Length: 489
Image (tube, rainbow, N blue to C red; front, side):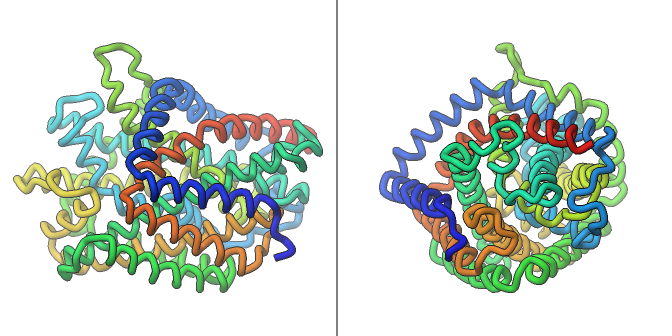
């Protein structure tokens, strides 16, 4: 434990205090955070839209500039992982559980319940549902993750700095980042990581519980969800103990294989021709309307601003709050790649896979809805399994989905414990197992308490609020990175 920094103790204390407040005063805590979240969304919505769009522009400019040939490491370094494994790790850390959780449910909601532009249930709404799903999970998010990860990887592997968010700001502030301001930046990063991942663990437990209930009649509730969290905690601690190049590597490869198998089966036994037609047209619509969607703020009374706050702006804040964790993990597994190879890989591969995924699951759900079976009546975590019931091989599909969720669950928690270990041991590339286990238990304890008090919404609100100050740090990271790259060239 000699490597442990004061960030560990400060961040852990804040986490404990927040959990106690959420457990003792769940209603008051949720009401307060909801009011602050609404204020942030309505007041800073334009800012989030501009910031995320700027991330895409910055990423593309850096990739195709004279900086693109710079290697993230020494000039002779080679990538630590194969391209397939690397892409698998991006998914596992970035949004694995979310893809399965929302793959059918989000497009269905935009189509049937609350459409962004067109009339609910119309053909235009069906297409918009897929286009906005691509938008919410595609290019903008991965550009933002890419810029944060690039900054971390450049300073860590090229300049020999510790793998900390605070280290990326040294070109602007110098040794001041070794003091209280640097500690504040790193504590904020740890805070966002813990609650972001804990909330996702709660989602994963709820959906695994829903799938087991759907298949085997297991009760849905706090006790089975707690058992799921405990079992998965044991598994991801074992994986974390085995190290980055073994546990997370093998799990990431497993995730990719299972996800591709599930995707191929759904395309094959679902409305195949409709899926491919919808994918082709909506991908074109996504590219065609990307600029308009990127800057849409719905400023006038006749606009659907409530939808924008609930979805796009919510997502932008949510992904920003995940940036410290995902960016640090992507940086850690990307040593040896050139900047151009890194940015193109991070932005293009996940975006294309996500588009295919949402086209397959969203089109299938919409087609089943149109056939007369109302999927919109089911809770979000049950939409997928009830969709499978309307297809051949439904039991096999549900079992694969549950295993995939569990695998993503383990990998996300595993990679998060690794990143939290790095952030609280002065950027160590090999944080002690005791620190990783401590953070693993802390994350799971937060998830269990949130499930008990029904406080997932309150903690979601909290990390969205935390995303606002971190967004300012992200802007500083861009200027610091540009200054360092210019000097490097």
